[in-house]
Length: 624
Image (cartoon, rainbow, N blue to C red; front, side, top):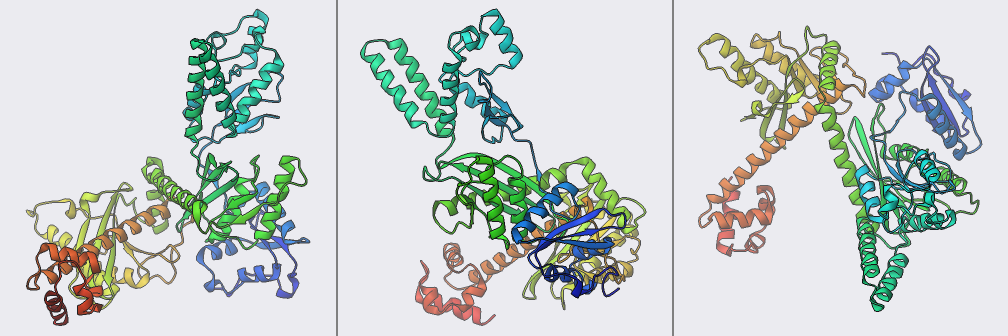
């Protein structure tokens, strides 16, 4: 392999100033845009010997044909220019978070002469007040159903309003009290605008004044025995309290913040954003991304903030992030500039990035992260369940590995042990790209020199069953008897060579086998010097990752169950130890390893365990 790429510039030619760099391919297309506080320090890292680069970075560098840079005055200017170019050129190797849906907002069009309230998925209406985003459209409509009798703002389109205005007769909503009917002159445009402003004030969370005013009016109506009006005020109070309760108070009233959570694995990442205004969660955003290059949490935060505030969202004074990025000062300046521009206030407060350490903010940040983890699981589940996606994954595997046909049945093996002891292995099966749990198998391995020897033993046992079935045609067929289109082992070249050896000795070397190395998510074929590298965002790599993770989970679960059975067996052999006492010791120490470290006095502190039984437990363990 070449030491580095031929287009590498001389180190002395690269400036040490802040700037933005761009990698281009032979056709001039921009592949990657990055920023740097020191261009020379950053770029020379890309031109290290190719065999020392991460595989994904190596693929980007070797795909490029040239690199160029632009010097700027400050790191802040570099950040601005990088964001501009990423948005303009959409480079394939840059992180591009995708909004997993178009979120609905509640909008009040205060820019119109007769304001109206509406549900919209765009934020481009001039001089409109937006509330949300909401996760579901029905949630907004439910809110409108409750508050329109209290704040009867028009909801009709411009065409419907003009028609009613010409007829001097309101529509049904005006007749049932859900619109103040300015079209028919029941209220003046000024009075209707006042109602719309009251609604906007209420939606910002400042609702105590409205509810207090309604309670006073209800009391006055009741005092003069106007019970019909009192009942109407009562219903309005209940409606407003119901709406207010749907936006749970999570922090102090003066707290305005956006809280971000990130969940990621080797191939994908999910982001959740909770919008908190005046102590209430006012909206939620979520994004997903398939990461083309390996990126740190700091880099994800950097790109996440660009995505979140690249539209019309106004950054609050405080933003809670999982990790402070390296260019936090420049990011803070950029966000502050956006805040002042969108608020039309040159003296608006500086935006600060923080990591929540303790208290209510930390608790809510933990909730946001949990939501991100769930979103990542859901995102991957959706990809798994899509038939077209699964079919493409199998076709890509066939092409990448040079198989004669798509591997409709894939078996994946993983070995798990505890410091070289208690060795077990798992076999998981995917058919047509979906897990077939009824075909999963577990293997106990009495003794093995290392992981490669264990993998060889497992594949030899699997192969022996298949060859035995071929020799004995009367042997009962089962799900375990179907040969796969592809064997996958968890590991790199040593593991895949050991598996291939077992298959060859059994005469099954016509069934392909491949190893998946976790560090770089690369595929190893038997006897090959270099791995097969799949595109980071390919469906094939996503399917291989599912296989590997499922095999690992199944193996770990089996090994833990085996260890638990061993603990029970050892303790049950101790004189005087019944099921209740075994359970008590397990609850206290959890494992034989921890129990071995304990003194007799420490064991005797366990409920129901006397000093004599504690001594017997210690003696039994020392003999094993």
